Picture 1 (cartoon, one colour):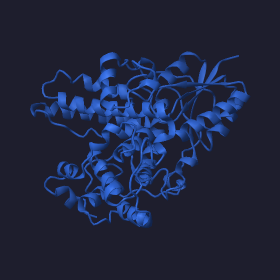
Picture 2: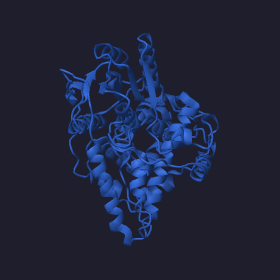
Picture 3: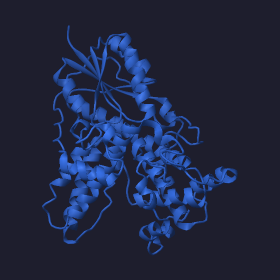
Picture 4: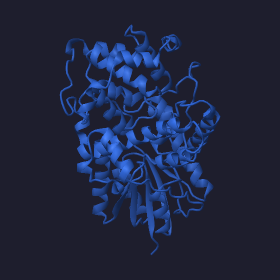
Length: 424
């Protein structure tokens, strides 16, 4: 009997640096690559927001099709199904006589719950669900401490792992693949099938995101070229905008690191290298914090107390904020850019969050939920972890005094041009 492995793709939509895929190919006669569109990821939340808005949904659909095309180029394909993974995967296991299922482990509650449901369903069939870790720069097993002992303070975390851990090389992308015989590989629904409308391009936006591994790799090379061109300008920091591809797994953080590291010896690129590396470390940090503390990050009081909430006016103030109608020019500009493009800078995110929490006295979880809907680069750990930190209820209590709205505004819009450009 031949060995068939079902490879369940989730937020890992790439061929390069994909240990799960490499091992599945090596240990099987054929594999069945599968992506399942779960409608639960597109429903309403209890906060009156959407789980996934139109901009990120479009990026996701493009990324899934990008993966299918990449697999076709090496002799494979991607089975696309719609429904609940805990229902569909056991059916596929029986239909195609699958001997094992591979997937990447997640850390947030909804994603891990679905994994548990799939694992329980497979257990009844006596089929193993094997977990892989492929979302972080540093592997969990290479950390200089167990998860339960990871320092809560980011600076301590950064110092220890940079001193005592190593970043592994990338797994090579496969150049040939053997897939199971499938009559109908399935079709991906259109955006309208998800009850979402395409976003009209805003002429003020200076960048357009296109989903897929190939697009992510092209953009990574553009970032490197920009670093080369900027080598004559000391300490220039460019916005890399790699986060959308990283969030959906079309780019591996290790791939980004090793490609950027090639520029380390080029004069005057160190600041940019350190800037990108810092972003990758923050992604790791929040992911490991979610692994350490679980769902505490979704609790309004988090690791402390969220402070004042104007309950009587909360919904009205929240609506003004998300509709860019607060009357505070910079904040309205930030929210307009977010609503129109799905992307804003880190300092813009902090500015919007600080104003919502401290000036409008709205619970931070409403803001986090809205960012979940709107951000093209949303991932649970970074989004909810960052919001908890800004609200002063994160696990690193030393970060409470770090955030300053006035300072942020000066850095974000020193001459007032940003507020003028993105006036709603």
